[in-house]
Amino acid sequence: MDYRPLIFLLCLVGPFTGPALAADSSDTVYIDDMLRVGVRPEPDSRSTPVGVVTTGMQLEVLDSRGDYLRIRTDKGLSGWIKAVYATGEPPAMIKLEQLEKKRAEILEELDALRQNVTVLEEANNSLNNQLDQVKAERSKLQLRLARDTSTQKQAGSYWFLWLLGLVVAAVAAFAGGVLWQRRQTTRRLGGLRV
Image (cartoon, rainbow, N blue to C red; front, side):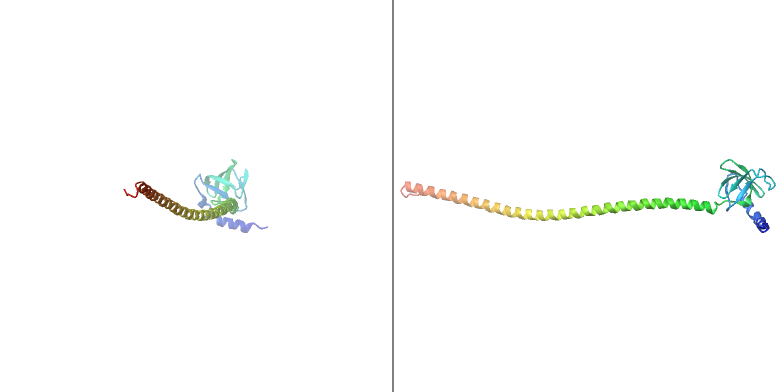
C-alpha cells in the first residue's frame, strides 16, 4: 500500500493544526481517531519511541515545541508526540461512551420514575376508593340524620301534646276539685253559697 498520499495530506494539514495546539502547560488533549502514536524522548521523529499512546487516552500537555507536544499520561509516561495527532476535543468514541453512560443513567432514572408513577397511581386509586366509601357513608349518615331529626321533631311535638294534655287534665282536675269542694260546702250549709 502506498502511504505517500497520506503523508502528503498530513504535511498539508500539519502546519494548520500544530499552532492551534501550542497551549499552556495545564491543557488536556486526546489522541485523535483510531491511532497509535509513538511517544518519543525528544521532539524529533528520528528518536526511538519510549511508549505508545492510543486513541481516547487523556494526555496532559506539559510543553510545546514546533510541531510537537510534550505530554504525560495518567500512568506517568511522558515524552513528545506530533501535535497533528492530538486534538483538544475528546474523540467520537469517548463522546459516545460518555453519551451511552449518560443514557444509561437517564434510563435508570426513567425506570425509577415509572415505578414511582405506578406506586402513585395505585395509591391514588386506593384513595379514590376510600373517598367513594366515605362519600357513601356520609350520604347514609345524612339520611339517618334527616330521619332522626324528623323523628325528634315528631317526638318533640308528641311531648308537647302530651305535656299540653297533662296541663289540661291538671287544670280540669283542679277546676273539678274546686267545683266539688263548693258543692260539698253548699250541701253542708243547706244551699247557702259562700
